[in-house]
Length: 509
Image (cartoon, rainbow, N blue to C red):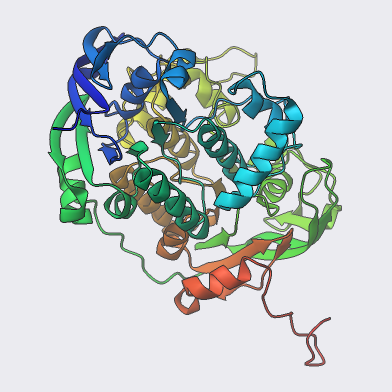
C-alpha cells in the first residue's frame, strides 16, 4: 500500500478557556486534494498551523512520508516541502511584493531573479500582480494573490490553503482551480479549507469534518450534496433567505461625479462615479479586486476627504469633507474588508473594540463605562453566535469567521441609517454567512440604506436589489438584480458596459 504523505494521530491543542483540537486524526495521501471542513471556530486553522509548525500541539504525533516528525517552525516545514497560504496574511506592509516573496525563498536567489519568477508564475496562473508594489497599497484580493504565488514558488510537496478563494472572483477561482488540479496531477498534495461547499466538491476527493475541535466524519465530497455537507458540518442545512421585493424610500447616499486622483502611485484613480442608495434597499458593487473599490471605500468612510464637498451626500447633507466620526453622526456605519487592523484592534478585548465605532459608553467627563461596554459586547456575542471566551477575549484570539460575525454585529446593533460593508462574509461558514445576509436584509427591511462591495457574485445576487460593476476606477450604470446575469456581470468587469445616454438620445463618447 502507498505510504501516506501526512498522518496525524491524537493531535490536541488547548488554549485558555477552549480546546481548539481534541484527539484529531487525519490521513493525507500523495497527490490527493483533501478538504478540512467545519464551521467557524471548529479548529481548522489551528490544525493547519500545527502542520506548518506555526503552532505547537500539546499532544499527538505527526508522521510525514512515513517518518515521525516534530515540526518546530515554518522554516522547517518549508524545508520538508510544506507550504501554507494563510487566511490572515503574513505579509510586511512596508515591503514590496517581491521583497515579501523573497523572504521565504532560497537566499541564493537575487531580488531581480525573484521578481522575474513572480512575473512568470503570475502570468502562468493568471494571478495578476506587480512585484514592485508595496504591500500596503494592495487590496485584500491582491494580497491573497501574493500569498498564493509565494507558496507556489516553493514548489511544495504539500500545499495548505486556508480559505484561498474567499476574496477571489469566480473567474480567478476557475483559473486557480486549473492550477491546483495540475499540481495534484503532478503529485502535490493539498489540504484545502473552504466554506464554499461547491469548491470542495469540485476539487477534493476526501474530506475530514471538524465540529468543536473534534473529527465528526470523513467522506468523499464528490458523493455528497451541499445540503449533506452542511448537515455534517453544522448539524443542519442553513436557513433559506427570504428576499422580498424592496420598497425604496428617499435617497440616503448620493455620489455625484466623484473623481479622485490616486495618492498612491500603485492605486486606482476614481473617474466620474455616480451612484445612489435609497432607504430600504441593498445596492451591490461587483468587480475584480484592485479596480478602485478600496479607494471608493476610503472616500465613503471619511478616511479620504479630498473630494469636492458636493460629491458625497448623506441624508441630503454634503459629507465628502467630513471625517468618520462626523459621518457616523449622520447615521453612517462602515465595515472595512480588513477585519484585523482596521475593523478591530487585534490586542484589545472585544469589549474595548466596541469603542471603535460605538461611543455610548464614554461619559462627557471622558470616563469609560466598562460594565456598559461589556454588556454591549456580550449582546453581540449572543445574538450573532460568536464563539469567544467572553467580552474580555482579545480580537486576535477569535477565528477569522467569528471575528467577522462580531464586527458585523457591532455595526448592525448600532442601527445605522446607512450601512456600507466590504466583503461581509469573507471566511465565514455557510451557517454564519446565511445569518449575516439575513441580518443585512432585515436591516434593509427596517428602512436602512445598505451598500455592499463583494467579490462573491452569488452573495450579491442573493441580497442585492440593484447592482453596479466597478472596473478601472469607473462605475457601470445601475441594473436591477432580477435583470442581471453572471455573463453580463463578467463582461462589465472588463469595463465593457454601454455608455450612458445623453438628454439628446445619443450615447456619450
